[in-house]
Image (tube, rainbow, N blue to C red; front, side):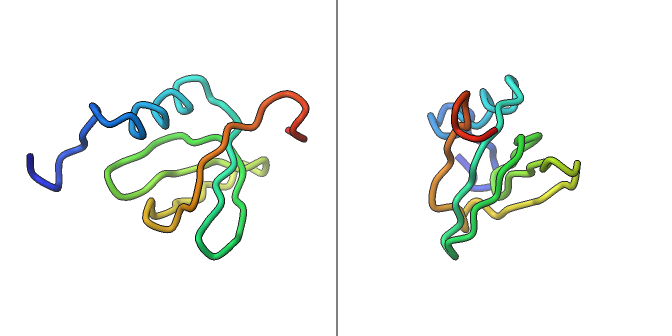
Length: 77
């Protein structure tokens, strides 16, 4: 498989696709320690894009992400 292809068989790709489909509020912690929250609206093989509470789009390189966490009821969202 070419490195430019989007491999939807990977569990991490399917997980993020599910977050997109359900419009789940999500927290991304970056390797810099910064936390970005919002709803992920798309992903490609290199980046994800979130929309925050101000409807501002934030594109994050996947290699900069330390973790992805769903924000549910009782977590402040």
